[in-house]
Length: 95
Image (cartoon, rainbow, N blue to C red):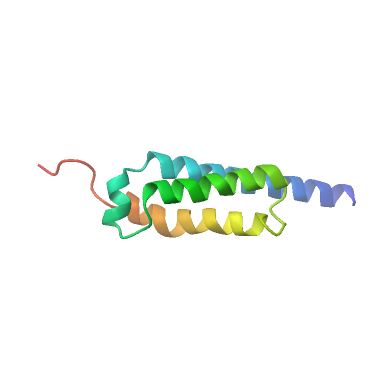
């Protein structure tokens, strides 16, 4: 493997690890009631999925593997679909 290939894979690893950790952290800070109100999977479900995705990327050390690609896809689905739906809901008391 050449130097360029090595650097490219390292950058892909860092980007995918940052993406999955961001999705996991965001899933933890959103209110649990927002997931149900938005009609999405529950907060523990998304926290488990995104947390497992972050661990898979960390263990595989490459997003270009049999388990790495679904892990990145799970994080992207959370960030593109679930996060905007949960974030758009009003928080707390509406008085």
